[in-house]
Length: 164
Image 1 (tube, helix red, strand yellow):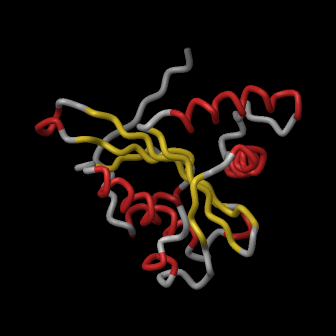
Image 2 (cartoon, helix red, strand yellow; image 1 turned 30 degrees about the horizontal axis):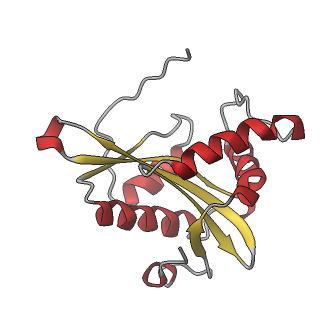
Image 3 (cartoon, helix red, strand yellow; image 1 turned 90 degrees about the horizontal axis):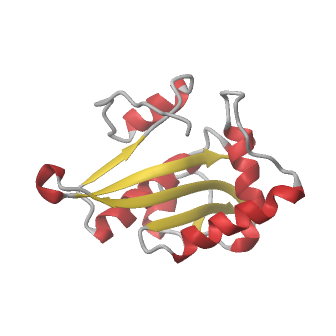
């Protein structure tokens, strides 16, 4: 899928959105590592770990409820976003879209790329019939929180995690 042309004109940069490919996986992993501010990331650029990432990508790619995209500028992958569709019974059985792994390359932040990516994801969610879009963000990412609020997201819930 190519860029949403109606979206890229809201950004000062030419950004193309497309489905991620297997070849993008190392760059996506780099974005995830570079975007981790917790210091607790177990992700690695070690080539020996690549088979695990490629197997996960194959699972994502084959699942109709998963969509993984990259943002590209001048042939360079500068961002990534994943959408997971989750059918629930709550709210009259509305389909939910969960945004995950929203990351922009550190040197490209503040240039409108994140806005292009999230608006693009919102449009994909609407196309699938999702009635609600949700995401979580590390509590330390205060700039990201302001960004999401500017896009219309509410701080409606408190998130919890449990490593198993």
